[in-house]
Length: 395
Image (cartoon, rainbow, N blue to C red):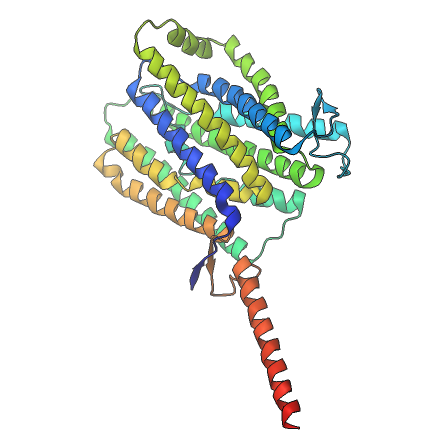
């Protein structure tokens, strides 16, 4: 009924998941062991700086290994892997605009994610909050790829998207129910406070939706650049990193990002060296994660990227429940969210053919389904040939 569709090229998504895990572990250590420091907007700056650094290192290694690559492009950076071999269908202006919008969506998505806060202790709760809704990215990405890249949607895709949509609706309703229960249980809360909590919840859900839209648009644009215009990954990383760094520098005109830098650089305690060491690790893991994200998008689809990001969501939901010391009355809602998260991850695996369901025609047009059909066809042809040889020998 269920078969595992492992392929060698799944190495890229696997490494992508590994660096996601390492980065989140580093983030958890920073936030829980060094609570007096704030890293929400500082992490954006670190991500884009290390994108440029690691992208440049990889590009230099690639040039040294493969020899000189044809130049000419945007800001002196070649946009093509080899202009003499590939004839790109799009003009330089269109490619520059696409890269600009990809950078813009990456910056807006990263900024939105850092805007989701726990108002009680001003803690960044994006990972735990967004984990409940992250699978909506595979729905948005699949629709974008269907209308823009003309990707086909087969039966196993439709089945997965329908189940994921139902689970997201259930999670959304459970979140609203949790807010109602929390408001009714706390008799000390004023009406204004309850309204404020409801507004914050709606705002956080809206921010999550905007972030998911930006992720889907980013992946779809980059997929188009890779498959149609043959853009080199490392050059794209550098150009997008430079643009995003320019965008991110505008954040530091505001008080909150400035305060994060002031607290960090004016600290005289010895632990500051450990903080800088962890921030260095965070930047390295972020740079490698973003490179393998693009490899995953290039070799597979934006939906595979969405799956790789959502694999760890059940663990983040459990972590959020433990860290936030939620009430026993919310245990039922936590279990509902966890079960829905597991179902959404499973359906995302079905969509991406990691798991193939051999029932109700869901194996149709999957990798394993095509291989099985081809093998059975070849077997029938061989048996017909053997029977014909037997008939001829009998004559």
